[in-house]
Length: 143
Image (cartoon, rainbow, N blue to C red; front, side, top):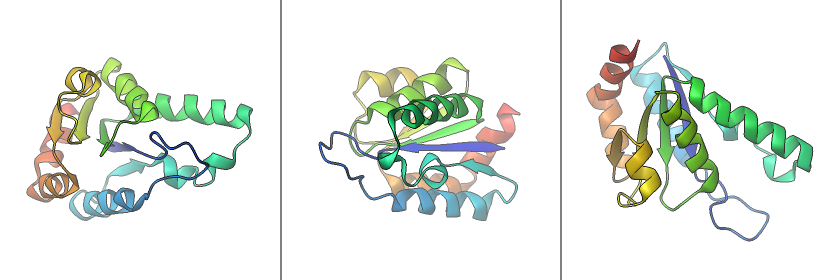
């Protein structure tokens, strides 16, 4: 079982910073607690200094991370606001026939409507889903 954690990093920021990434660890901890065999791909954990990458490494990282979203069994996209990178990861997962869960208040956004199999309103709802075993069932049905 392979889960890709997509989500907001810079969003619409115009500075050289990123938004808080603690949601990633909360998701990963819940997944590991309820799915001990899960493989988790987290772009931030893999590339924590990506805002400092040179243009060539930015391109290489962007392409490899979007491809990885298409390889995972499930993509969880945390979007408290719009994120262009996450939208492309969702699009890639969708085109690969992978299951996509969007965690967002943006339920009327077309990218969400088209690519997400499930839309949950917030992180607490996602964590409840994981704890309830629904994600385990989704992953086992897909394999």
